[in-house]
Amino acid sequence: MREIGVRCKPDEVLITTGAQEALDLIAKTFINPGDIILTEGPTYLGALQAFSAYEPDVHPIPFDDKGMRMDLLEEELKRIGKGGAKFLYTIPNFQNPGGVTMVLERRKRLIELSHEYDFMIVEDDPYGRLRYDGGHVIPIKALSDDVLYLGTISKIFAPGLRTGWIAAPKSVLSKINLVKQGTDLCGSSFDQVVVEHYFTDTPWEKTLQTFVKTYHSRRDAMLAALDEFFPKEASWTHPEGGFFVWATLPDYVDTSSMLPVALEAGVTYTPGDGFFPDGVSGKNSMRLAFCYESPEHIREAIRRLALVIEDRLELYRAFLEAGAL
Image (cartoon, rainbow, N blue to C red):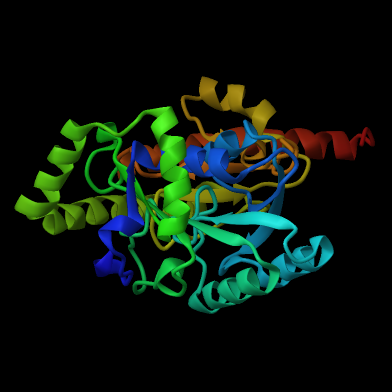
């Protein structure tokens, strides 16, 4: 935490069974049915799943290439009033699924709004160390001790070890800890010993740079392939790090119904509607992950996907010319 600009004491950190458990613990601790939760729109599907069990009213706030729109957030906060929102959940670094990063000015404004309208901030940072362009942006947690920060070793060591953490004020952690005792008592001691050994006794920073170099080349391969193959009607984000690109197609393209055709072509993606709480918004969008395949496979996958999309666009044009639309 110190390396990324956050100072916290041991009793301000709670080890969790992965960051996903942290999301569930926060939801179980703080959400009552009908509570208003603010998120980016779109946002991480796993967070929506964790929150949904406790029946909140999730309000998504759109983002642009500089992160969550603070002007739209402020409009929403004025509408619901002070104390109307329980907390705001954000992935400020290389957001999942959008790939965008919240600029420092907006992080500072978010802190101001949280104080003015009396809501907590939950900062989820699984990808922050996987930066390919630009310099480090200070975490929101470093700007305010009140922030609940979620970390994980899954993207920089081993996802199977399921080790994450929450950094938060002691008064908040004491409540979350009571809930955790009813969930799993404690995380795996074996996993934690392995993680401690890795980050204490091995040159993990060097290994991390190997990861960054690998993912960087895959990100570049996907962006280059999108420029080469995707139709001019499409747009997409240009992530500075992380794993994902968010692509948007014309409004008449339904990426959920298009997915079986893409699978037949040997390529897959995640339809956009799953990243919105209403399950309807984002139907013309998709999340593209570049973290797994080689640059060569990524280029071929985007080429195949572009052909599937072009078939949909051609069908629409044909109906349009025939006067059927």
